[in-house]
Length: 245
Image 1 (cartoon, rainbow, N blue to C red):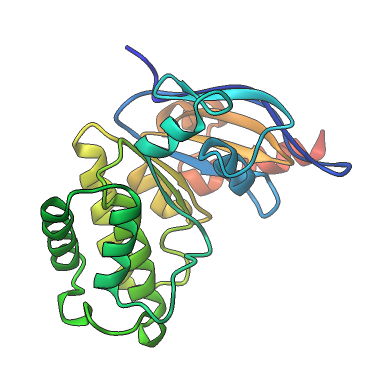
Image 2: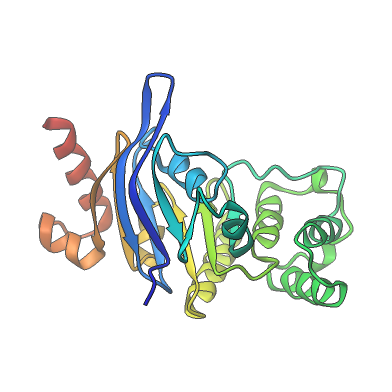
């Protein structure tokens, strides 16, 4: 079976700074895959390359068999992206936002309306459907951005810090959607600083530091390898060990 994502010697250099340094990864189908690392580890840059926002300096990757360099349009059709900066238009409402992006995706009106209504209900924003985005709380804006990412039912979701700074209930609802998405055989690629969240959601994780993948595997495999008892301890052990080399 084709892997969800295959990354081959991926490099991104900004001037003389190497943000991503010869990363190789294989992500199986139908799982939540975590990308963990300290600030500046290269997580966001890696996600931007995989979602075809940035062009690699070297190497390439395939998303469901489609090369990010040779078939960027096809890749964009099958992915949904929640960036760290949501980039929403403050003057639009949640309903207008979904309509706008759905039309950009070429969705049929009947399907677009049904999907929008279902998502607004699922994430508890039905009563705010006609409120201006600029008047919404951070948690509500994050939900709108997530609805925009999943509106067209993509096979793979790229989520960059999806619950950062959110209240307990908003974060819980977003985690619920992530679990539901993966349960349907789709993939979620999750970049997060929240170790508890990663441990709850991810079947596998890659730990990055200074642009490189330090280690990759299931939580259980990393526990056995490092002799640590939870993901936070595994993370600290691996990052400190890398820094000491």
